[in-house]
Image (cartoon, rainbow, N blue to C red):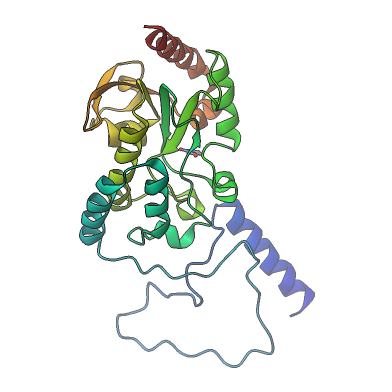
Length: 266
Ligand code: URA
């Protein structure tokens, strides 16, 4: 490859990374605009690799079963997990969600399973995918600071996500992916059995609290969450990533934190 061409390829890869495209899903590119059935001309032999995918771009195939089947097997599997450890082991074995194939690892939970308060976000990002723990990146650092204002830290809370695998490039999980993962997070909440459930941001709030209202309307309002064994109090608040982008809403988040503190005292 000529130095000019190598520079162009590097620039293109840097552009992809910046745009969040950081893993290859297949070994070969797919021409999604080709006419169905049209023959794809084969490439002439190359003198060497055009470019080698860096280690951070694993080429993987997703071979998840049909979504309805996956949802059913998730529902059946999740309810049989007797403990959090069994649930984690079950998720490690579960192949029904295609996100598992593109993520580096399962991001199950962090914190204290005996905690009285449980925070639930949407899905792991890049840092979480690398470390295997939820909320360890920039938004996790803000979450730590938010919790600290009411005397909480990772030894006194339990933290998880609705989706336990990072969506490629941090894209929004599809409704199907969310529905497939839902029985697992519901069982996780039931097993932790916190006194207060805090949903972080819109996706987690709408999924867990079965509301269509947006976070501007739901934040700071108490909901009843039925774990399957009892009703617990649930409070939606802003996702820390949103607060990083819109710091003026920290004032409202502070009100929500004080409401959580009051609920824990009561
Ligand atoms: N955002 C989330 O919703 N969850 C994480 O774990 C990290 C960022």
